[in-house]
Length: 321
Image (tube, rainbow, N blue to C red; front, side, top):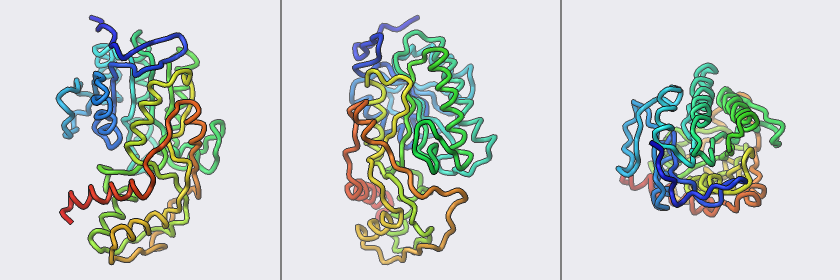
């Protein structure tokens, strides 16, 4: 049975102008997904999610949950056909905390999942917008939508996934937007990531071995990224586009770690240069924040020091420091 269309959804021939609900998510239990779920529910949007069988993080009871692997085309198809969503956000991925994972594993998780969702979407007439998440690492040392340059298996798998998504847009008219978040940070991030690992060390007055930290990154707070995904869901006339989610400002990694030390007044030592740079490390990856703002109206609101303080407070509370 086809569900009646949500009052949030106002489909047109040229795109979406209001939030298309219900929204079907993959990766809803992840770092970014949890914040997106919360914001969608706050907006009174009906939410459904495909959750991996081994996932233990509990979603809110309002979320309609389907158990399955995102690479399982049958499970994905059944879930999408059952929900009849107006919007889809695909966040599920592997390698975000291990960008050097084996190539075959990267393809299975990040390419097969996109293909399964694209094929399922093609069979459902209710879908008005599909948002799929890539990575700033797709750019590598270059900075152009037409000159992607992967430097590890994770970024290569994301570019391959983007190519299939682009093919679906061109061949099937899938109303798709590809989104590339930059250096996302905030409460709830995996401890292996740069900022949480530095905060843990700083709060415990431990030494922090790191690379020389000369590489520059665009650090964007997780709540801003979740708001950016909602903007990509609802902005008109952006089908077929690839959008950056970043602040447009670059910081040296070493400078960010030093800010954490200053904010925590840590007595540990920053051991810059103790670790080697990763093979293929890119010196700077800037986001085209202006283009995203012009196309969607979205821009990052949380400044770096504010985001670091919020993240430090969260870790300190969790660690009882």
